[in-house]
Image (spheres, rainbow, N blue to C red):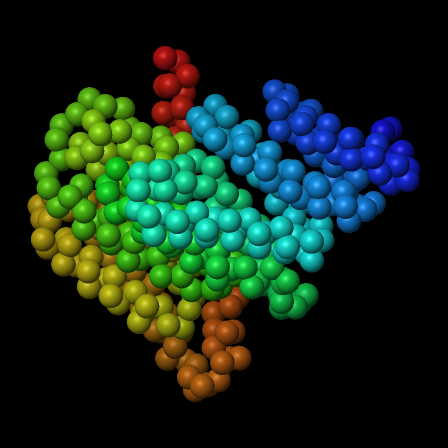
Length: 372
């Protein structure tokens, strides 16, 4: 086995560096997923022998992933996700080294975003609104979710990567706010889908609801959609909607589906919080006004969402009536409904059901596209 002699490569720095470069090339360009995985496993094992090799691997695996994410299609998305999973696994090997690389790469994202906010030119916007930037956001979201898990911290203490959560969230919120145009709603959903798992894993509150409300307030929902024979967009692989999709019924239907799923995912994260009834109140009031204003063409999900929010609020209020501690007891607040499974709440159950429906629908559309 080749792995058995890797330990001896540390005695030959130049040979080892050449080996790392070769492995990174295979990881980043091989058309065979088995070769990519074998290259990654060898890289991971080699990086354990030296900090230099670890640094080369951390940087190289991430950059290989980003280069592959330049053009995203339904066919290469699984490959990109596999590379991301490998990179995330490597970043759990040494948190001190990982922090340095993650800090630099997140700062690079922040620099591109600041340039776009300052210059406001087409070229500066394109530095942010591209597949590589968005998949970089997905990468760091997954790293932080994996290694800043709130439940793990109860046993192992605070993660060294936790200070990166705030700058990462700020960059992501800034990205989804950069251009409010409906044609970039697919990009907004990518950012929102990267933020919600952060909330779920780290228990850090992120105000996502206003950005979903912004989509409902857009012309895509406030004006009657045009009939169209266009196929639904695959929001998993696009960041910008073509002009011929805007203001059409298929586009509005996709937006409704994703707004519903994101609202359910977001509020499910909060459904065991003692403050849930107060947190959801502004959104509840808005959704009721929205339903009244858009009747009789209100999206069907709105009333169901309102019902599930109310049922969950009632459940939390019932639990609150039985507590014996005061609001100043922070330790007791943290244990409120800790043992309650999120997916057993009304919102969590609805979210679980919607995810199954959407996954089934996605498989059907993929089969139809493959047949064509």
